[in-house]
Image 1 (tube, rainbow, N blue to C red):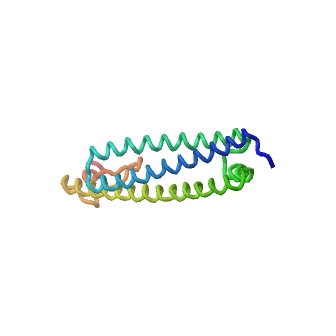
Image 2: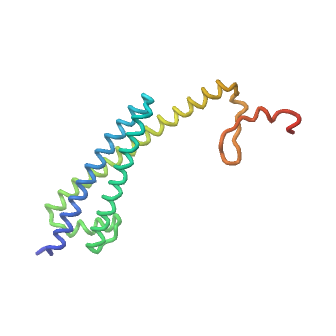
Image 3: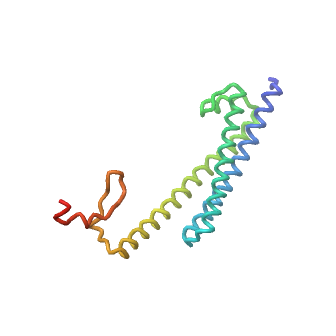
Length: 166
């Protein structure tokens, strides 16, 4: 069966974009590992730089995803998992195998990035809790005096125990 040259170009474009996506996710994984170290060291300047790098990588990943979706649409398929499956079924076997290897790598990297991001979020939440607790101690607040307001924010309501407030 002869493959349309335009379809062949779309297959190659999609494969190239998938490999580029793998590289972007690998860079993001490394950035998240660096972020973990920076968070543990509490280095604000390094965190600012790391955040800028991470932001740019996320923008590049978004552009990569849009380009891959565009290739699927140009090929006449929906930018979805089912569209991807249909698209790959039209590919020559050798190209499909190479793409699927890259695709599985991309999926693995995505899971690794999610795990690293969740870990960094937990580090950040713990650090915030520690700072809030220390600040409360320095201000002389007791944890029993902390309530939540209508917006869900914490507040110290010890002063409202006076009879005049009732």
